[in-house]
Image (cartoon, rainbow, N blue to C red; front, side, top):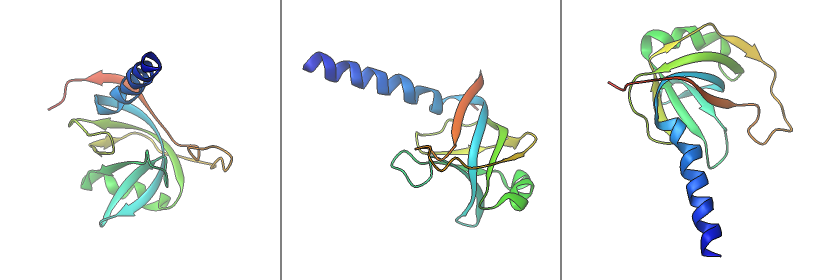
Length: 118
């Protein structure tokens, strides 16, 4: 029983480790306005919701997509905790169709290239 718990804890630690790294990410996220800023939300409405605030200079790119699901590449330059971070720059943005049957609602955050944090 204890071995099973240890393996689960190790698996969870490794699965969350990628979200705390700096670098370039493939982001499939819902665009929301939070606290007056554009944010990209991964896993909306769940306990594992991740909020990525977008830098002010880049937030204008997201205005046509408020409330919609998008895919883009985003660069995170500062270390983030597991639920909050800041996207410094965005790549080209593509609108997506949501997947209502998916538990994550079609969102995803995948590390493409790791870089050193500022």
